[in-house]
Image (cartoon, rainbow, N blue to C red):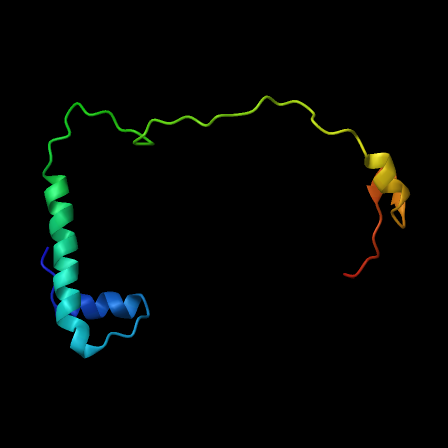
Amino acid sequence: MKVDATVVRLVADLAQLHLDPADLEEQINSMNRILGLVESMNAVNTDGVQPMANPLDATQRLREDVVTETDQSEQFQSIAPETEDRLYLVPRYVE
């Protein structure tokens, strides 16, 4: 696909961008270079190549799921203005 002034104006309009007429030629060239790169990438033979989610094939290191802090809920509940059944009660602001 070859980009021309009509396409650039349409894309700018759809993206709600102001396009300075002095920059029109530069935008046409930039979009054509990008599409040229995409075309060359599409021309690469990828038969037999397995798709991958991560080019580094990294895995997330996870820590062991253990409790590391003491339960302080009683202390926090004791200083709260109002609690009920281990829940904090707050004034109602929305009717």
